[in-house]
Image (cartoon, rainbow, N blue to C red):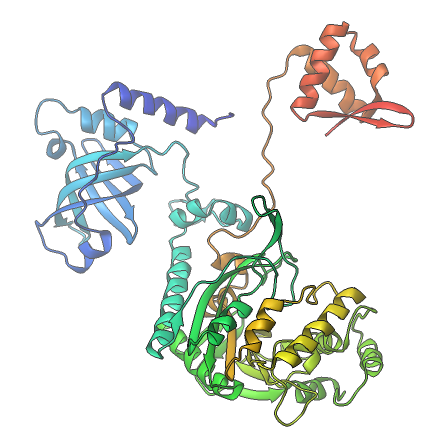
Length: 565
């Protein structure tokens, strides 16, 4: 393992601490009774406190030192005085341990009393301190010059997402995003519970990936010897529970879709889905407005939110427009009573890429996505989707070509999707079969399986039901003014980190590697001749270079060749 100079020094300090009989990673409980926030809110001069946290800065001035301690709620100033800490002759704890063997980033526990400095800073006078955990890697802390300019900020997105633990320590504002995320979940949960609905859990590993049009992740169950699919949606399971007699159920669902990644998509994401019996999509629109207004107020203290250059307001009511009228408004094309061929021609004339795998529903979806969706900044309900786009949705009560469905658009992005749920088992079977045909045609987002167990459940009878799904990650993006989904996920999916390979090579290995590098690609026998090595040395050298992934040997029709990796 290649260590930096600072990492080497910190390990040396670790050894010295152990030599002094100090365990740098003690196992016993530390009896906290205060926090940085609590001290500031309920400050009492002379009060005894026991606190703990990371050492984040210090200003050592001989026998005294001011430092900052960071805990889970903020920072507090602490004051180290040699004679307060070391009342007797032995000054080791201050002179050696504090001054020389502690580092920024170390966790320490402090027992002390509160006082106010001459400049009015609430401070803890340290009476005793204890090392709780030695940090062996320096934190990526920003630096400030005498003029107050900041340098070396830890703001590279890739590094921040890979090392979220460091990001949270050195960028405290990041923590606020995740506090608001939890507030959102709690607000939504309490809203549903107060309405009398029941939180449930449904399977993440499913024998059939259903409830959405998406590519699943596939795994294998060894004991049953069957393929299983990571959940793409929980819809069909929640509806089974409505069949079973629950009046309203909801779930915060971890879903997985094996699709592309961008600023608004992560392969693992959180959706909330709720199903309420004896309701329809009109009721659900009203419910959705009230829910989001409540959530915005709870999270931010106001219904207004800033997202990029836009000011959005989650105060109900929201605008409502049919998909047909929306497409007419922004393209002039009316999708009503049009054939698949007519819609294909229209889409092409609008500059939208189409192919033969696209059915009528997919074509309309592409037109709406390309020409309409981005225009809706304020919360807007898009209603009455064509039947081909909604295989799980009830046919519209006045137009059999449409379904009773809405999507909520904010800043050009969908954050909620809701139906009057299809509860006709015969119609549902036909819709599934149509999706299967689209899949066979080449549409890789169409449903590839028919869930016969779900059809059986519907045959037992499901009451009229309305359901809604909300993308929780996307919603918190809007409420915290974050343009990227990676900012609202603690640990977003990343490409594997490329680690620098540190390998000790002997002289022969260095020489052979240099020959390969110069040639880029060299015939293996020529390389051996140029190396001048004996058979035994040659075999050992080549084996080490390939084992350490510094070079590889490939076979072609012309022979065996060596090249660098």
